[in-house]
Length: 248
Ligand SMILES: NC(=O)c1ccc[n+]([C@@H]2O[C@H](COP(=O)([O-])OP(=O)(O)OC[C@H]3O[C@@H](n4cnc5c(N)ncnc54)[C@H](OP(=O)(O)O)[C@@H]3O)[C@@H](O)[C@H]2O)c1
Image (cartoon, rainbow, N blue to C red):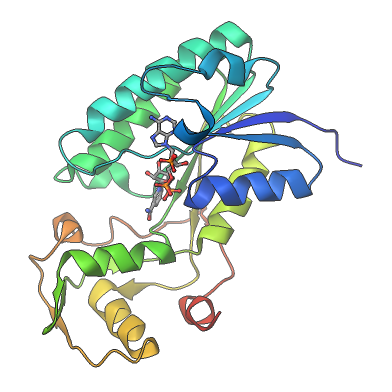
């Protein structure tokens, strides 16, 4: 028998957040999703105090609306608001979802913004856990769309170890109901690919005849060097493979 916990899931309508709410609810917890559409704006703080009243845990699965120079300000403001409200409400555990290797890609402002988000959490007053995941399978579609036209898709040969959103959500739910890690748990998918190779697998599965052209200057992931985004020793390795996910 699980002891029911009240858990506020901010960004609980998003890709990961909605899955986390489903898992926690199925496990017998009172998981409440919050987002602008439910009246909570983490940037202004509107609705935040009410959302955290009586919550034992807050899980922050919001995302910046853009991945550009505006993203550090988003993560700074939302984390400052979150931590002061969580502290005032006596919330005993704050959880965020960050990115494996974010600190190893200083040329990507969005990744710098995620490190800033982590640093604010670590320095704050609330016991915390950081889950760092690799790139989501679901993120391939937008990644390919940035550098695609009717003649093909350009992708760099960046090495990545992608993971299914369902597996990420499972890990976030597990961490959220445990004791604060006061540290970081890394989770990653079971296989390493180069991004261009992953693009070819994706297009083939969709019956899309366009070629993937290897272009080490194309798109966001061109800024990544070596194995920065590969989970090292100690990471939790999820089960779902990319081909299983595509087939599903
Ligand atoms: N993409 C990847 O491969 C990857 C890898 C590792 C970690 N991550 C991290 O995972 C986290 C979740 O990503 P995701 O893909 O699940 O995001 P998502 O689908 O874009 O969902 C974001 C959620 O945040 C909410 N939100 C946005 N602005 C808000 C605000 N001002 N106040 C309150 N809620 C707000 C959204 O609400 P609305 O729907 O109402 O706008 C939505 O519920 C992100 O922090 C990201 O950095 C991503």
